[in-house]
Length: 147
Image 1 (cartoon, rainbow, N blue to C red):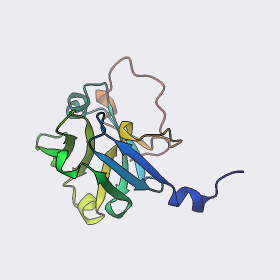
Image 2 (image 1 turned 30 degrees about the vertical axis):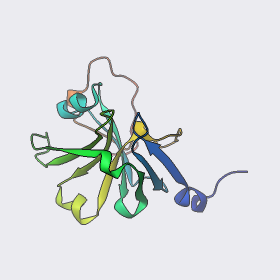
Image 3 (image 1 turned 180 degrees about the horizontal axis):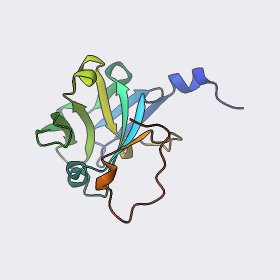
């Protein structure tokens, strides 16, 4: 039996930080899915890039550990917008991000670090941000739309 668009739009997924002190639920499919190759995202993740899924704040609910979340306000971003990076104070996992971009604020957009979701998903990245900064060994990432 295949899922309908209605089923997908109401599906609730769970996620957490590495130590599971911070847990959350998110409903439906993301507005967009982006990969970021900027230097700050590389440093924040300790990896070659960061994968981010975007939801409206009404779709996201922290179910445990809100008090464990700490925030680093990243003022030196490639976009020039302040990016608030929320992480678990126990294990250090990146969990959420929030941009000061006017459109993101107006749209009440919350960003989830995709690696914190508990289950696999079939979403495909729509864009790659700062692809000119991509590590030379990164190949095979395809996107479905331009920014």
